[in-house]
Length: 141
Image (cartoon, rainbow, N blue to C red; front, side):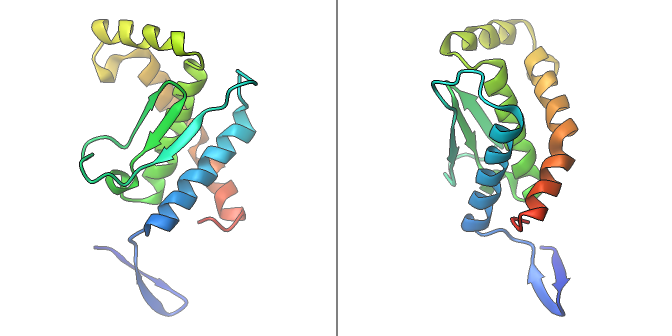
């Protein structure tokens, strides 16, 4: 377990559920402000889950619901990246009918070569620093 020194005190770099939730929610709000909502009438929903049965997935997007699993992410960086990544999937597939496109491509490509995943990975890398700076300015980090 990593330790850091903050104002002369030793603190563990373990995020509480409250901290993890605040980071995820603030990242989600940043995404909505930065990228908007192509649907206007129906908004995406963020679900922050600490389900201990989930062990492999940082996040998941399906039918306008962005799920993030901070207990799997383990740190603020991965929580931010995951929310941005899954928000990108919302932008790619805002309508329920758009999900079929994703699943068709799954038959042709594995995860690493899936065009929508490649796009979401590039998107998260592009916007991570900007989002992190914003969260820092707001005192979230």
